[in-house]
Length: 317
Image (cartoon, rainbow, N blue to C red; front, side, top):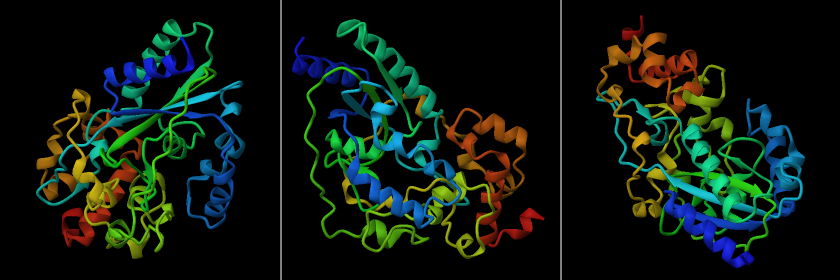
C-alpha cells in the first residue's frame, strides 16, 4: 500500500472500531511548545503535579519515546452524556461516571495496533498512549486536525464539541499528515467568565491548573485552600463548567460505549449518605471508575469542603 492507502485504511478501521475521530500528524520536535511549557512551569501553574516538569525532552520529541517514529495517529473517543447530579447538588465530572477509560481505550488500542501491523507492516514499531507518558496529546491532536486548543485549553472540534478522550499511536510507519484546524473561539469568553476559581487566564489559552477545580479535587493531595472552598460549585471530582458553557458543545451527541454507562446509585444519595461515605463503600461504588485516582481520603476531603460550604457542616460532626 502507498502512504495514502495506509492512512485511509487506518482511519476507516479506527472509525469502524468506535472512535469518534482520527487524524494523522508527522513526527517532529514541538519547538513552538517549549517556551510555553517552560513559562507555565516557571509560574507554578502545575501546582503539585511535579511530574509535569519531568521528561521535558520526551514531551517535545516523540522519537525519544519511539525511536525512528515518523507518524502520530491521534484519536478521539466520545464520552458525552447529559450530566446528572445528586439531589444535594454534588457533582462528578461526566467522564468519571463510568468505568475507567484508561483500561477501556488501552485494550482497544492494543488490538488495533496488532491489526495495523498485520495489514500494513508486521515489522512496524510503535507505542500507544491514553492520557499517559510524557505525550503532549492536545498539541498533537491539533496538528492532526482533530480540533483546536480553545481558550479553556481543551481540544474543540467544530462539529463534535470537546467531550472526548484523546489517545495516540506513535509509530514508524510513513503516513499522510492531515491539516490542522483553524481556531474558532473568536471573541467568545464564556469559559473564562464561567470558571468559579478564575483558573483560565483573562486572555484565554492558559490554564492555571493549581486553581482548577479538577486539580483541587483530583491531583493535589493537599487540603483545598480556604479561599477556594466556597467556589467549588458542588464539584467533588473534576469539573465540566468550561465545557458546559462552550457553544461548540451544542453539537455533542451521547456516546454509545456501554462501559461508560455505570448507572451510579450515588446520583440519588442524600447529604447524609455523602457525608457518611465509608472506604468500603468508596471502593465498591468507585473502584472501577476514574475516581479511584483521587483515593478515598482525597474524595472525602472534597465532599467535606462542598458540604461545609453548602451549610451542611452539622452533618459532618
